[in-house]
Length: 136
Ligand code: THU
Image 1 (cartoon, rainbow, N blue to C red):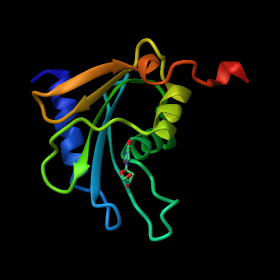
Image 2 (image 1 turned 90 degrees about the vertical axis):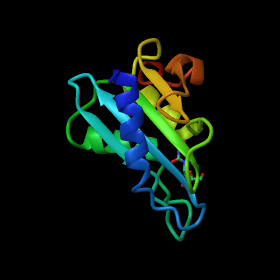
Image 3 (image 1 turned 180 degrees about the horizontal axis):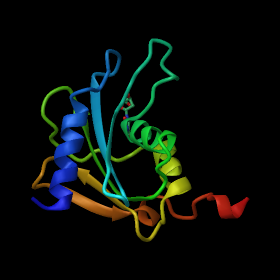
Image 4 (image 1 turned 45 degrees about the horizontal axis):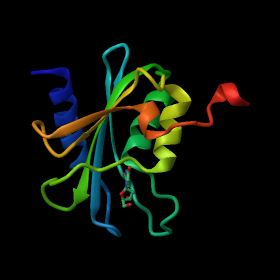
């Protein structure tokens, strides 16, 4: 199976863990590290709403908190409860977190409906003119 398909499958599995009693919108992410590790994440909502964490950031924070900071790609799947029917674009906050750790011209963002239907973007396309550490 191709690396992209494997990542999409992992993101779909991660989506099963989404905790979404408020929006009922379930997102899964699978983040591929340069060492080959795949970090999974789901969205985790909260009764106070704003503490909600997106799937993409869950995956990044799991990885970074374990000492992993170099990444090649992330697959994201999301949609209302039930099967995913269309691509789910990462929110601006998640794009900003990607920009902290990933090369804008190298890191791939795979937005998928399923293993056969997906689009691949470079991070720079999704977050042009990013505010990155080198701008501080
Ligand atoms: N969500 C994600 O997990 N990732 C995104 O990129 C978009 C939004 C979550 C947050 C919230 O739990 C639900 O989707 C609806 O916004």
